Length: 328
Image 1 (cartoon, rainbow, N blue to C red):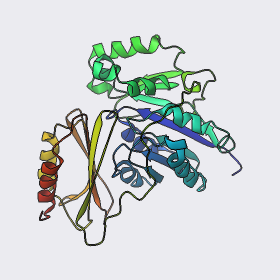
Image 2: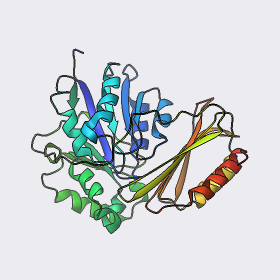
Image 3: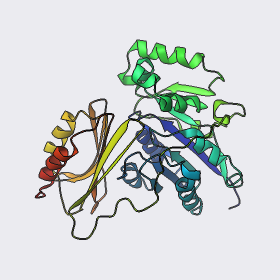
């Protein structure tokens, strides 16, 4: 490689809209550029990569927990695989329960100094969460905002004026100051934000080493021959996840699936599912279900649920099997 690849870390807590933001960036990128995305998810099944593949980006997934643990082996493997494809830009999306500081440390290490041009780290935040002790007392939440050079207040269309005031007050007292901040809706991040430079001495320059759950690079999504579905569970940092992968030959009833997701009390749900109305991506956050049609075909349906409470996975599985027409 003769040129360092412009690279951005886009971080933020669960449900803040990281994937939606990256999808918007991919839709609006220069047509002559090839972008790569390294996706890290807390769940074992991996949903985000499926959503982004529909946009033609080069995707590498690291599911099953924070990717920067155990000397960063899973992350380095993923980054190296993408860099070998010589992308024009690399975007890294750590899990909403991950620690971006170690990701920054890896990308600014001697291993990558000749290959990666790390731009400003971008953190997304829902301004409503800045008044919620559930978030403000969470170390990961604070670490993600602390490590960012740029902070984007997303979902502004869902905020009250008081939420906007809290965001403004919070931004103005940050030390060191944030390089840039903006309020947006639907993850509509301007492309030019990606080219903002990291500032030496900013929060993202101060890296602390830590250890946590190891993310595996073993195959995560392979459906064994003759099996209708597989199920994978994960837990850590006060959260539980359960994911399912279903054979491509099974179709879910769209209306019944939408109703079930609307009634589900989990904090976070993502899915890419073959239905009787086509392939759709489902995204559930703060009790709101959003749906986008995908152009994928012959795709293995997958669904991931994350919550701070251990949920009755067996009961949920029975419902999913019924919606897919699979006999339990």
